[in-house]
Each structure stands twice: as C-alpha cells, then as structure tokens.
Image (cartoon, rainbow over all chains, first blue to last red; front, side, top):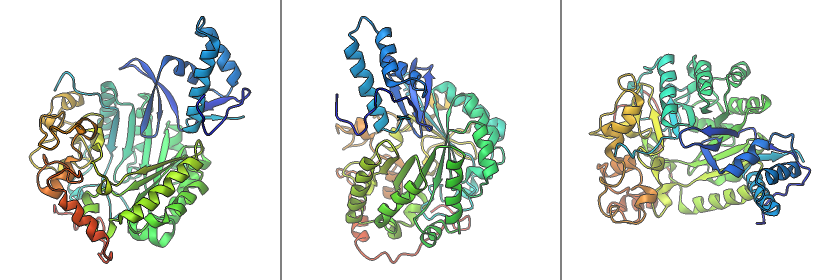
Length: 99
Length: 366
C-alpha cells in the first residue's frame, strides 16, 4: 500500500466530507464526486465504496461487502484497492472518519 | 467543430455586477456599469436547466455580489432541483444569519467568502470599504450553520509576505478550503498592476509556505495556491481552453467563454434571452472562435504544449499586445514576452503607484 498521510482503523466509519456530494453523471454514465470547483470521476468500485461511506459502516464492513460483490476476484486484491482509495480520499479531505 | 464540441462542466452565473466593495483587482470589466442586470429569475432558471442538459455539474453563483439579488434563494433552490453543485461566491456583504440559513435550507452546497488581508486596515484599504470584521463574522456564521466554507484571498505584493498569517486566519475560521489566488492582471488588476505585481522572491517564499501548509493540513483544510502566470515559464490553460469546460453568463445575459471575453473586439456574443444555450455552445461564432488549434499562430501552432495550455489567455494576449490571436505574452516563447519581462523589472522597484478603485465613474473603456 502506498504511504499516505492518514491511516484508517478497521473500525473507523468513513463518511463524505460536508463539502462533497456523490452524483450520477447521466451524460457520460458514471459517478462523480463533486466539491467546490472540482469533480472527480469514480470507477465502479470507487463508487460502490463511496455509497457505503455514510458514517454507518466500518472500513472492515465496507471491505467485506465489496469482496462479496466482486467475488470471485481475490478478496485481498479488493481489500487493497478499497483501502488505497479510502486513504487517498481521506488525504484529499473528501472523506472523513469518525474513528 | 460542432459535433465534437466538448462538454461544459461549469456554469459561472454572474448574477449582477453590482457590489458594495470596490476592490482594486476586481475581475469585472472596466465598463461594468454599462452591463445592467437584465435576466429575470425565470431567465436564470432556464439557463440553469439548459446548462445542466448540456452536461454542466458545477454552478458558481457570483458577480459582483450575488447577495444583492433578492431572488437568490429561488435560484439556489432551482439549481439544487437540477442536482447542480451550487457554490456561492461572496464578499459576505451584505449578509445575515437568517439569509444564510434560508440559502442553506434551499440546498446551497458551499460558501466562498473573500477576505482581502489578515487585518482590518489593510483588508479594507484593498476593498475600498470597511468590511473586514463583518466578513469574519459571516465566515463564522457559515461554519456555525454547518455549511462548508472556502476562504478566498487574492494575493499581490502588499499581502504576499503575510501568507503564513493568512493560512492561520483560515485555520482559525475552520475553513474547509483556502484559495490563495494570485492576482490575474486583467480588468482593474491590469490598471493597478504597478501597485500589485509582486517580485519573484516574494512569490517563491509564499509558494513554499503554502506548499508546507498543504502537507501539514492534509485531510483537514485544502490549501490551493493559484500560480501567477507573470512568473510562469508557460501560460496557464486559461478556462481549461476556450469553450471547452466553462460557460460564463454576464448580468446582461451574454454567454461568454470566460468572464472577460466581452472585452475582446471583433466577437459578437449571443444573449441567452435570444438563443438557446445549446445552440450558443455548439454553433456560435464566439464559442468557436478560439476552440481547437486552427486559430493559433506560431510558435503555438507547432508547439507540443498547445494541447496543455491551449495558447494561454486570449484576453491577456489582447490587452497586452492589441491582438487577441497573439501567443499569450506570458509564454517565454512568445514574440511579445518582453512586455512581461518589463513588468517584472518594474516590480523590483518601489511600489509607489496609487490605487485606482473600481468605480462606475472611471469605468469608461480603457
């Protein structure tokens, strides 16, 4: 996993930062994160992760859900992808964690 | 150029050029007073709908001061019904807690408040109005209500040496985002360039401080440092390229590729009152004028950076060289680059120049 500024515990419950909104882009048929004067295009996995970032689900639960959904892809590869994405989003201030 | 016209992402709605402030670097055109508010609430709502249908996702409500329009609540509500990300760009004057709460209830996504400096005398001097303390109050109200807050500070030679204090101020206000935007020398800022252009040394110091703060505040406060193109080797990709990502609507209804495009000669801009936005975006002469590469002179035409910076800023090219198709003189390869080198050399001398405040009286075309 690449070194990032923030760590997320398995029990942390990530949620979108207040300035961020998830939106379906019907023009190009994809999900985007919108925040002031910027937009971030999400791939399918990232969009699935963001939809679970409501503050209710723990990181561990999100990883588990995604691993189920994307089986038979190896669970450890999915876990790596999810954690890398979440850490990058936390560093960019787009996702927050209540610990 | 019609079928493969790119998709706009951002609509900049300049709701009015009216503003209680008189900032010496205002980006409104010098003749702003001749562009009166001409769009009704229904007109703006239609423009929002037509923009969203074209692919726009971001809406900046700006001006002038957008809060002087008493239909702002209706506009925010309409924008959110279209699922547009709605950002209010304001001086914070005039604003009350009740009004902010109403705008929040209408679905406002973000509030950007400008301050001009870190202390009242300096900030008020640049704004031409006693406003600093009130701005801080408004910024605090934004956070109290739970709205996301961007603090915007325009940088120039008088406040660049206080970047650390500016960052500390934004932190103390719990801003979600700090935009440190170096002055772009167009409009009133070009009039006041002698007084505002910093030295390279000032700039490098401030940039390093901003970079360190960005790392330190990672995940807490986003710190943006908008590069001043006068000290760049190559131009910025102004508006991400002409007619590629942005539509600006002026208070009188002109559909523009950038907020200063109507200062360019020889282009006629359509009004959204007269023609559907879809048609203007795809088919108008103005939006097609500097799209793509056909208009480019050398050295742009054969330059491998042409798809990154799109030849730079058309307005800057015109206002500095007299030709809107010239290579942006900011570019170190531009035939007119000496104009920028002269301005930089002037910045090494004493400031001394008087400030000219934005005003209707002095707003005859330069």
